[in-house]
Image 1 (cartoon, rainbow, N blue to C red):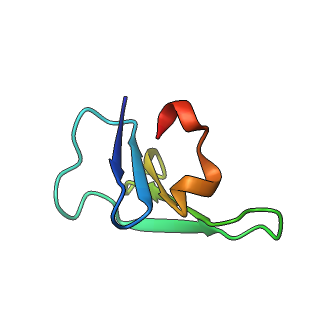
Image 2 (cartoon, helix red, strand yellow):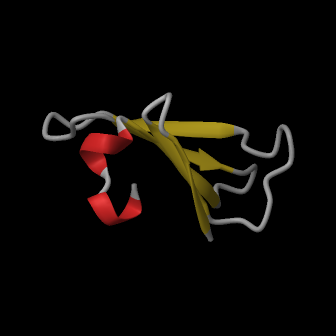
Image 3 (cartoon, rainbow, N blue to C red):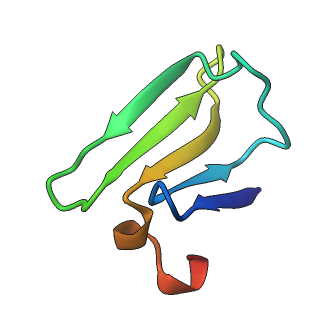
Amino acid sequence: MRLVIDGEADAAYLCLADSIADGEAVSQIAVNAPDLNGTIVVDLDENGRILGFEIIGARALLPRSAQ
């Protein structure tokens, strides 16, 4: 598991898989809850397993220690 932060885009990616090949994430679920100050996108493989999470609006959603 690793966290990659793009400060310029105010986004982060929490990768659960060792690596994700191009096209391996075949579906996404976007979470836009009213209490979130951003969006979380769950990437899924063809079997519905979670590959990782994209965090848009990372500065507002992640604790300072993760930024």
